[in-house]
Image (tube, rainbow, N blue to C red):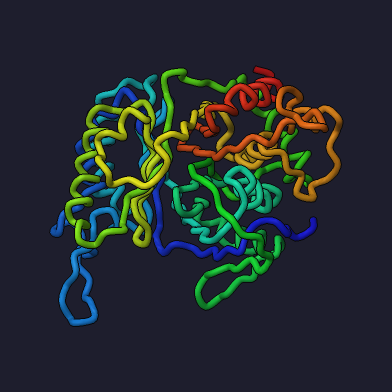
Length: 404
C-alpha cells in the first residue's frame, strides 16, 4: 500500500499508563455515580499527583482535570463506558461493581472491568477533517488485524489498543510511513498537509483477528458491513439528542480557579441527572474536552470553547453481540461515510454510489460532498457523530450497506 500523503504533520506517542475498560449498564448508572465522581475528582489524599514543584521550588496545585494520564467517561443510549488507569479502576470502581454483581441475577447485564490491560496512543498535529482522520489513522491498524478504540477530542486523537498489541502497532505504523523515535516512543509522520477540524470516540479488543486481515480498504469495508448485517446491527438515532463539541477555556489565568470550579459544578450537574449522551476526556496536558447535549451547555456559564450553533447528531450501533476479536469496525464505517479509498484498491460501482450519495447539491458531477463525521465507540457500542445537516445521508449509507 502507498504511504499516505494526506494525513497530517503529526506526532504519535504512547501515554505512560496501563488502562482498564469499564462497562456499566445504564440501569446501574445511579448506583455507580458516587464512584464515578470520586474517580473524576480525586482529593489530595487520594493522589500523589495533586502538587508539582514550580521553578521557584514551591508546590503548584494541579487542576482536577489534569490529574489523569488518560480518562474518558462516556454515557450513550447503550451504556456508560469508562477508560481509566488500572489502579483507579480497582480503587474506585471495582468495589461498587462487585457489590452490584452480587445483587444481580445471572441473566442480567453485569457491569465489568476488562481483564485485559490497554495502552493509549496520543495523536497530536494538524490534519484533515475528522472523518478522514479516523480512516487515515485506523486503516493501517485495521489492515494489520489490530482492533482498536478511537477517541477524537476537541484537541487531539487517541487510539486505545491492547497492551499486548503494542509491538504490532509499532510495525503497522512504521509500514504506513511513520518514523519511530525509540528514545521517546514517539512517531512522526513526515508527510504533511495542514488544517484540523472537529472531534469525538471508538472500538477495541484483542490484537490479531483469527481470520486473515483484509488486504484493501474496499475489502475491509465489505467485511465490516457484512458483519453488521450478519449480527442484525442497525443504526439508531434518538431524535431528541443534539450535541455540541466543546472544551474548557484556558485563556484567562486570572479567572482560572473560578473557571475550574464552574466546570466542575457544571459537569457534576450533568452527571447527577444522567444525561442521554455525554463524553468527557481528561489528560495531563490538555483542557477537558466534552461532547455534550445542547441542553446541558447552560450549566457551564462561559467557561467552554466551541460553537454553540453547530449541532451534531449521534448515530448509535449496538456492537454488544459482535465477537470480541472483531476488527476494522471503526475504519470500515468511517471509510464508507467519508469516502476515501486511501490506496486500498478499486471500488465497485455500487460502492462508489454509497460513498457520495446522489441527490441535491451535487454540482456538475451530480454528487454530494462527503459526509463530515467523527466516531465514538465505547465498551459495547459504536457511535458515528455527524452534523445535523448530514444525518439523512449518513443514515442512508449505514442502512443500505448494513442491510438496515
